[in-house]
Amino acid sequence: MTSEVQEFYKEKNILITGGTGFVGKVSIEKLLRTTEVKHIYTLIRSKKGQNVTERLSLWKKDTVFKQLLEEKPNALERVIAISGDCQLPDLGLSETDRKLLVDKVNIVIHGAATVRFNEPLHVALAINTRATRVVVQLAKQMSRLEAFVYVSTAYSNCVSSNIEERFYPEHLTSSVDEVLKLSEQLSDEFLDNLAPTLLGKYPNTYTYTKALAEQVVLREASDLPVCIVRPGMIIAANKEPASGWIDNLYGPISLIYGISYGVVRCTVLNLKAQAAVVPVDHTVNAILASAWQTAITHPNNSAPTVYNFTPSDNNLLLFKDFVNMAFSHGFNYPLTKMIWYPMLQTTTFPWLFNLMAFFYHTLPGYIMDVGLRLQNRKPRLMKIYRKLHENMTLFEYFATKAWTFETDNTKRLWKCMTAKDQQLFNFDMEHLDWNDYFHRALLGMRQYLCNEPPTAKSIALGLKALKR
Image (cartoon, rainbow, N blue to C red; front, side, top):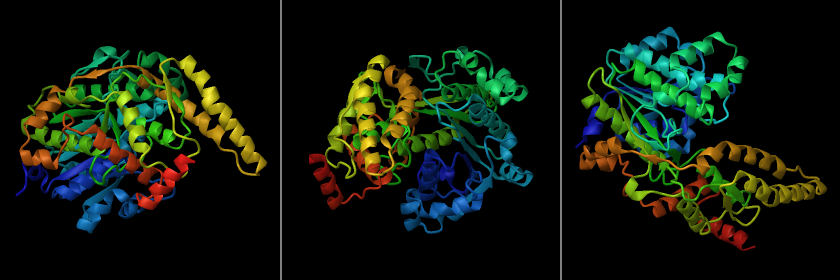
């Protein structure tokens, strides 16, 4: 017996932008494994000499699809690669592909974005904002459209300390129309030089262009069955597609990764602030459920429903808890190739961090690089630390400030689902066992990012290295 959400997706054609990304691949895997979708169209751009068909064929070897292909060997045949690039005008779509999408698509999940905090403004605007407008305009031509989900971020309005499930146009220095018009009229270099003025209080081009994209949805998509999902910092999977699965070093996972190798020994971090982290599988389930709810309840010409997806008020995770659990589980299965013993000193003062970093990072790194040179080996630590300190500076804003998030709409979405749907599309953050989750996430990081097998022998070698 199928569930209501499964029945909704049966025989549907879905367009997913950002399908090659972290959330995109998990979304595609989940749909193919648990529903009977007809086709999933996903935008893929040519890259490193590979065309879109060749890039799609590589998915057969991707660990994210391992369980799916064991259960359904031909599942990826339902995925159709569409040649496109969100940085190009009109997404770089051919007329044939555009007509195909307009005629066939029932559900749009727009998640494509550049998540680099230091992306030049002209690039971030093209990918995060202008592409959103193009996708909205494309959706308006889809006669069979039933739901449109825009995947934003919980930090799209980070200039407010309390973030409600509403829009915040008052924080923008100029309207989205004016900014996009400027991007068409000015050179890339001139536009990038205007970034400090345009961003206003926003800390980087990522959050700013995501806020602009929300304004696109509010202004131009209200006549569509549309909603916005704002996830927090998305990290390793809880259980799906595999326990602890992850394929990137974004956000707090990069901190744990560096600590595990003994390379990161100090950082700027407010231990009393909420760590608004969410597992990728819970995030995907919330996105898929929001599309179902939007299709059956959204009235025309009304403001899009906003779903903030962050830890529940009744089950918050502070950065102090985040660090403690990371160490607690990390010491149970340490890495075999750690450089120094894992430790972490934190401060909320950037000037103090610079002092600590000299003694904990720069000086030891310099000494080790000298030793490598004396052995006729390539020095590496100083290069790592330069990049590391650059990334820490970019993350400093989010590591030192505290936010609260309203999640009433997300809670209502959860409550309106049947027990079977809650089981199949679980995004319940109130009852997530954080301790159990970190056990899974740390083992996953060790396996999928550090390429160390989850075997007793490998863990024993790690414990031996830790003791040494």
